[in-house]
Image (cartoon, rainbow, N blue to C red; front, top):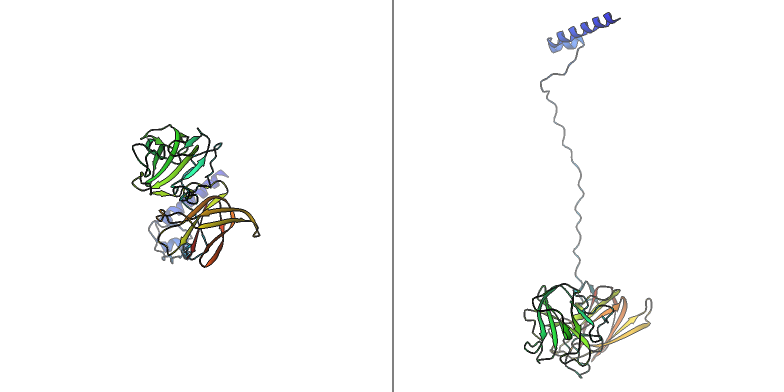
Length: 318
């Protein structure tokens, strides 16, 4: 058996060698096939096309214009922390808001107040550098010396400044680098203060000592959790501001029942540089009715306030 298998192997090998030396026709006739070593021309395959998804063109949304809409809701520029932190009272005093005169009883207010006990810690509203930390006896931040008492001014990015006044203690010095939330002083009643509180300002521009470079802090401080802010602009033919009474009523969900009412006035004269004429923060999210009177009668507007956002409203008044 082994001999016969060996014979078949020798015979097959002999035929294979002989076939390698024969012309192609001979090998075909002999029934022997092999793969040639030279290239064989083949037809070029037809190109294939992969369909692509057609581009989708989206229309650029048109920005909301509060001059033509009932109101607009925008992100706002809330970049500063409250300078008073719990357990201190971090609420803005509503009785003496920015740019108000308390009915002509006081000078127009260039900041806001946080009513707190003597010695309550005061914290930096944002990262920055201390540019002033002393009594305002040699450098005036208002038309009067010793008006703010012990005062700290911090420079932030974009020529933004925050001012902390009437302090009982100053815990930093000029040149110190500060992080948001750092304790920088203590509440007091120095300068022209009539009681223990923190006077807080936001100033914009290259001259941080400019008394008229202030902005309403209510539009720069983060609203409290679950609340938003509103700004109201009055388009009027008058060239100067006056304190125009405004009523802001919070409405119940699904009805016009009034849950709470806020009474405020538009900015006094001297604040014509501001883009808005009134502002209010820490409003619980929901529906609000804003009302005011002019020579044409009553104006009312229902608006929506969203948490962490700013609602802009514009009225044209006579």
